[in-house]
Amino acid sequence: MILGRRAYLKTLEDEQVISVFQQKQWPACIEEIYRRYAHLTYGVHLKYVKNHEDAQDLTMELFLRLPELINKHEIGNFRAWIHRVASNAALGALRKQKGNHHLPIDELAIPSESNDTDFTIDQHLDLLSTHLDELKKDQKKCIQLFYLEQKSYEQIMIHTGFTFKEVKSHIQNGKRNLRLLISQNPAYESR
Amino acid sequence: MKADRSLLKKYFNSKNHRVRNQIERTFQGDDLVMDAFEGFHSDKQAWRQFEKFDRHFNKSVRMKRYLFLCVSLSLSLIIGWNFIPAFKTKTHKERLSNQPKEEGIIIHRQQQIVKMQAVAKSDVITPKQVLLESVVQVQKQESKMQALEKMKQMPAQRIELKKDASNRLALTNGRELYIKNFKVIDYRYYRKEQTKNNLTQEENEFAEKTIKIPYFNLLSTAIEDFAQSNYKLALLHFDEILAVYADDANALFYGAMCLFNLGEYTQAENRLVKLQNITMANFREEANWYLLRVYKQTKQKADFNQLRTQVIENNGFYANKALELRFE
Image (cartoon, rainbow over all chains, first blue to last red; front, side, top):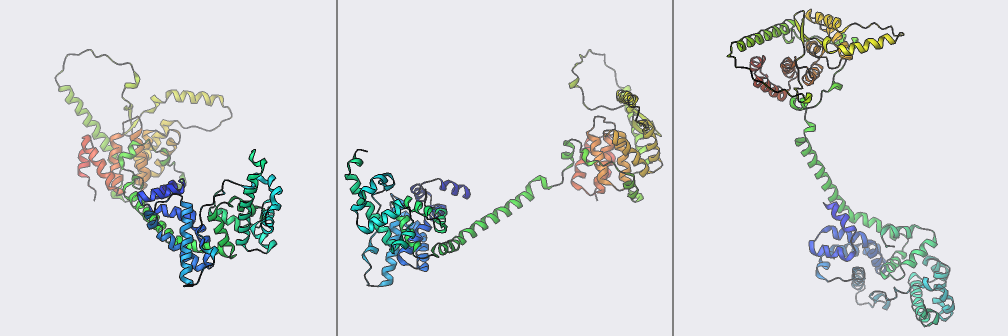
């Protein structure tokens, strides 16, 4: 019976699992969510607190509080929701640790759903080279290494001396600027 | 592609940067995954640390699962032990409902028979006992015939006989004759055709020099040995018969008597059970009675009680004896 529940829940989307939990309160739903998201939330916590013990505590606390949170909130997009909850929990913990100290502005940025998911550079690699020079130097370098030379983040970090966050930021900003530039290109409009 | 554990494990354990680049490109638009990547990139031991934490976190869940499995396993074992009949020894009725268990009947070798030990004198079924019972049984049957003759006769009525052979009674009493006053079925009549076929075969096979002792001679010798209480020798001859004719009622019955007297109760039981499943019903009553004695010797109380009730209910020759026979 319980094994059957687990197998059934594995076939469902995140939102369906949440809905089942809200209706039937099956502990197996939380187990399933844990299986899907524990590693990701752990990574998010680690990003902020930069300490294994604290990241472990936060992850454990998050999943212990999860049934209560799910029952309390209306959840539309679970992935975005849990990302926000994990980030907020980590930031809250940081605030407690640092007392009245100010947190860096980028650490306070609460993640939101990315709005450039429909635009992928891979589809416009031909137009990429024509607009690459119009980007800032660091952005251009990161985009070139990542998309054209197919280097990993780690290799780019070694190559440029940037941190992971900087590489990620340059690639994301460069991608956003490229989207604007490419969308103004008549060749793109004609597609 | 889903950012599940296996993919992240592959990403962090892979030294191929092309593979890593592919995974990073796939999740470029996914802030959650990119944040997680960033977190894990802050420390090279991060993924290992997570796996350690995961094992610890799952420990309680695993414990619950093991507990559940242990409880269900022990419950099913208890239920199985108490309710599934496969664990029980088969009852007399169940054994009868099955086809004769030929695999249970062993054709003994001379060396095996030599090693057998005779049972205590008080437990032996003596040839005299078997002889007396069969004589009394015949006399009882005769007295029944006399009683029938005394009955008032009714005018004969025409009865239409069905020609369908399949509807006839499956059980038959074979022709009987007496060797040294011991009842036997005269198989010569039934095995005529078979013997003829055997003869023609032998005529064709000139190379074969084996001397074949006729069935009747062998049976006579075996009965003679049984009558003289030479159970081992008699068993050897009855087993020779059974090796050729597996359904031979004479060999099954007298063989079972020999085995009983030699303390081989399981083999005796197998032969008596088989005797109840063959078409010739001449030894059916005797088989039931001696099987009852086997059950008593082997202390199979449930089977004994069941068969005893059956023998008493049948109200045959052994009904009174069965009433007197008690399981102690």
